[in-house]
Length: 240
Image 1: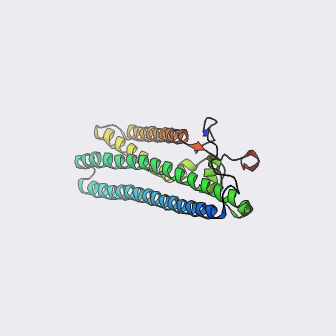
Image 2: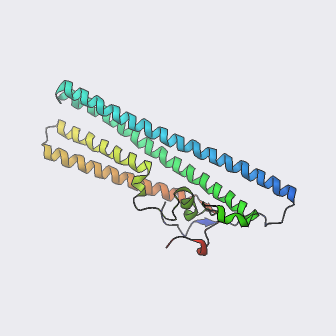
Image 3: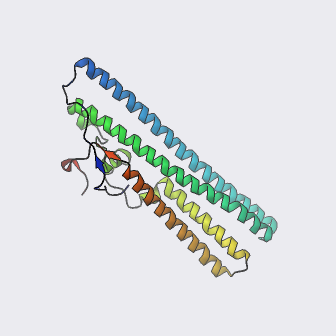
């Protein structure tokens, strides 16, 4: 996430004011809110598990490919057989990395939606019982700052968060695969080692830049679909 976009839509709260319903209705409302809260928490656990599983599949495939390439290289003495095997195997691993990054982007959107819903429910809790506010460590607001406080415990995104997070790690590894594939391809046509290294580094940099651009576009699309009902008041903001 980046700094909040002033174009983000803000919708008014539809929660009735405290005291608008009787005690029976209040208990029913609380039960409904708690049920929804647990549903969102379960949904968040599911997407987190899927993100870990998809990442593990990619890393396992990459590890297995490296081992296979090492065995083939030893058997063929880095000959034509090794080149052919590498040019078949590495693009498959690269494709797996790309779809993993795309799915992780979808998972992040889903996770942000569930966190936003939980923040709204927390806001409802505090509207019913304002005296409990000192005991909540997560946010009651559903804008950018509120989502970050509830998910990362910070009001702004750390500068290197894009590479610290799982999608960034996968993007770097997949860019290395792209660079290695290009290097093997140009080496097969008889180029020098220097040219091979330059081509490999260049493809790595271009691929990583493409992933960064994709991440920025994904975040922009995500923020374009967010409807903020409870923005963080200026007096409660922790941003400096």
